[in-house]
Image (cartoon, rainbow, N blue to C red; front, side, top):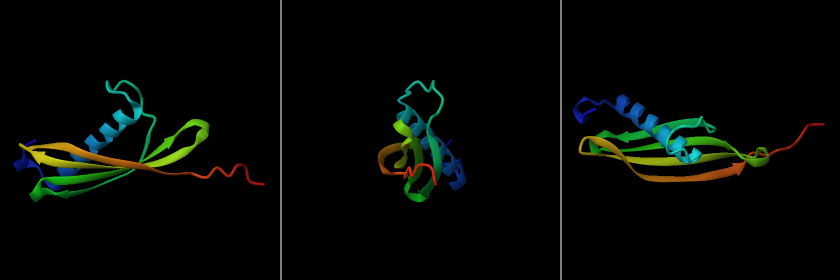
Length: 106
């Protein structure tokens, strides 16, 4: 896909798809893309500054860990266009507070 033929919607779709794939691979430590996904993607949004060749993709994941603890994890992937191709150059992320486990109601 060349820079000349890309429009904003096409760029958004491409970068969000690539970001989902990177997050899946890293979270599963499946660098051969062989296992099924265990992460739940809750939300993906992006901001593109096409004339500067810059974009940010934000993603919120739900991770269920041991003892049923569930954490929402956020990530931001920054992309830049170099030589007509989009490349991820920076990733930041963090985890939120676990969801409360209030047990059965009485």
